[in-house]
Amino acid sequence: MAASVLKTPSLSARTKLLCQTGLSLYNTSHGFHEEEVKKKLVQFTGGSVDLQKNDNGIGILTLNNPSKMNAFSGVMMLQLLEKVIELEQWTEGKGLIVHGANNTFSSGSDLNAVKSLGTPEDGVALCMFMQNTLTRFMRLPLISVALVQGRAMGGGAEFTTACDFRLMTPESEIRFVHKEMGIIPSWGGTTRLVEIIGSRQALKVLTGALKLDPEKALTIGMVEEILQSKDATQSLEEAQAWLQQFIRGPPEVIRTLKSSVSSVKELCLEEALEKERDLLETVWGGPANLAAIAKREKFNK
Image (cartoon, rainbow, N blue to C red; front, top):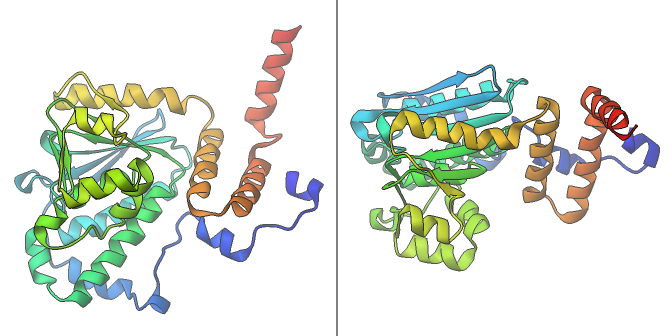
């Protein structure tokens, strides 16, 4: 409606592609061959990434490899992509909580996979695969929360930055240990961390491999809140209750709001405004809008 009334040009092809759900950052034009990477990753078994989609519109994504502190095996990396694709199709969804099994978040990559993928070429291919996956995750029209129980280390810490919000339980920690492994964050963690806490704080966190306990993380703006319970079940219930305040309302409105905010992260001002305009057209005059207007008219009488 808005676009047709204003008669302004539609979004550029670049802009449409940039924020399109389901679109990857890298393809063969970048030297990235996804199927070849998948063939390598499938060799490293262990653990699973589990998804539960609830009727209240909240999904629960569980990193499940407790014998290795929920470290990502190659198979888990593949399953994460599969679950992201599934969530892209979940039109009833409004929110998502990511947590780890057995009361710990994730220790990052499984060292067995890391050691076997030892060449720079292997490292770059894995980097592009996980950047693709977590960028698609970040673009989901779901309000996402990382529930940090226990430790979020290395790649696990990077994953938390792909979520919209982070909550921590007492005695948990987030730590970017990459420096101590002789590398840098490669799943997009540096870029997202700078956006979350600023370049000065990010530099301290990364170069110092700082242990961010809940209080420190809250002080620097890394997390939204420290939960009351450190019990796995109770803290998950707390996280769902916290998320509920932001997902009240029709799915199409919540999802469009998330998409609108997400576009600003990736577009310049002019493009972001155009994206906001085009997203508005999908909800203006829709069922939720008309119902709200009717309700307000009754209230004003």
